[in-house]
Amino acid sequence: MGIALAKPERQVCCLDGDGAMLMHMGSIANFKHVILNNGVHDSVGGMATAGSRVSFTEIVKSCAYSEAWRVERADEIAEKIAEARAVRGPVMLEMMVKKSAWAGP
Image (cartoon, rainbow, N blue to C red; front, side, top):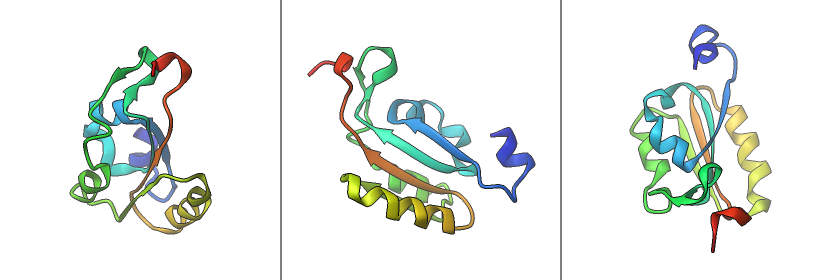
């Protein structure tokens, strides 16, 4: 967040999981944000989050993001990344991904 605030002319991208996004919402209005949403805290054992029940696109739009997209298929990602890079100001791309092997069924 420090770089995004200190150098507003730079495109700063934050890569978060859905659990991290839910826990750190105080810093969201400064980035090009990519959220990997698998509905769990994957890095700490797979405890379920509210990530599959909330609308991150609606949340960030209410925080003055210029654009927000949700993709569910791999073939949509490249196009949306290009769009995100072309937009000035904060944007979010939520990518729906599968849980890892250690996150359980």
